[in-house]
Image (cartoon, rainbow, N blue to C red; front, top):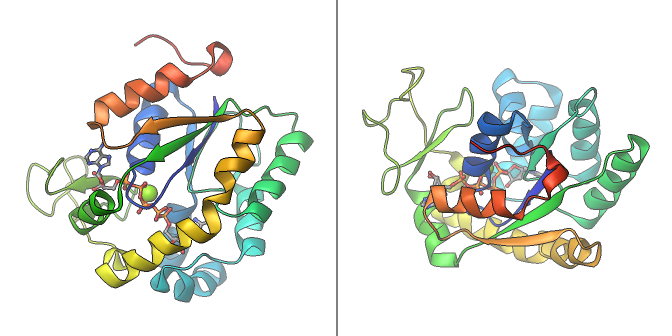
Length: 218
Ligand code: AP5
Ligand code: MG
């Protein structure tokens, strides 16, 4: 399974990538989660990314592309969650796919309206150790502020503050939206309604997958 998840902040990319990873074994590659881990470990990349992420801007393409090349070494299936996000990233990814003789199954575009996205991000709580998200409105943890599985604390992301969320939505419009036509022109784009309940979004994604993409009935 080789998928790209494309969509604005809060559309549900991470939620669905984790579900499909568990169901089909294809690895979720979330550039946001990987960058946050670099920040946590205080690596050079983490330090370089910090100011961009805190402002809700994109980290420079050359840093992201180098990071992805490393992450994909030895990979077979993958669900790209939050990459590519610019045309240069998409073009670099196409080169990487062709060097590895990999064919993309499809690019799933998550649609959702601005008010819903803002509402979801302001009520999101995240496990910083593995990127799992909860939502105090739609998917609360059993104990507030505590992860159901590992029992550790949940946090609210710095970039989920209202001012930064506005920037992130603007960045999506300006820099990532052109990828919709890019992948539509390649015949790869499928759209799912990100406003549906989580299990219905999962079902809609599974329906869009081509038969050869490794999905099995479950
Ligand atoms: P990143 O971490 O990728 O953030 P994002 O794209 O802004 O997306 P989010 O993670 O906020 O949303 P999501 O779609 O995953 O939604 P989720 O499933 O959590 O990037 C962060 C930063 O890193 C960027 O701003 C940039 O600085 C940098 N960066 C990352 N990648 C980069 C790249 N390629 N190039 C350059 N810079 C890069 O869901 C949201 C909430 O809604 C949760 O609480 C969830 O429980 C809830 N929810 C989900 N689905 C549903 C549903 N169907 N119904 C009700 N609630 C739902
Ligand atoms: Mg995410």
